[in-house]
Image 1 (tube, one colour):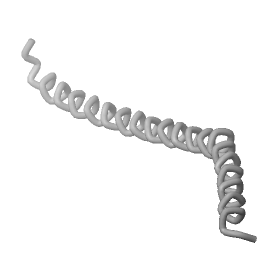
Image 2 (spheres, helix red, strand yellow):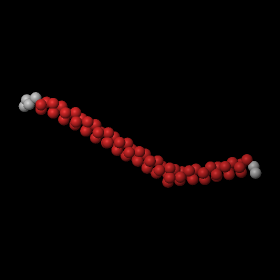
Image 3 (cartoon, rainbow, N blue to C red):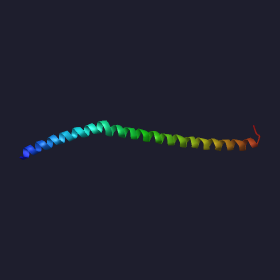
Image 4 (tube, rainbow, N blue to C red):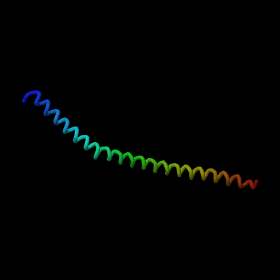
Length: 76
């Protein structure tokens, strides 16, 4: 086999491999990555919502306790 024939075969293999990789990336890799990132985002937002609700409860307790102390003075 001469060098030109070998190079042509290498180019053909490269083109075939690129087609396979492009197809895999478009049909498997990108959709899976998008799904994983979306799920991670939703989980993080859920944790943030839980934390914010806890913060709101603590703030409510603080102001409620403050109001209780103020009400003890019976000054309206």
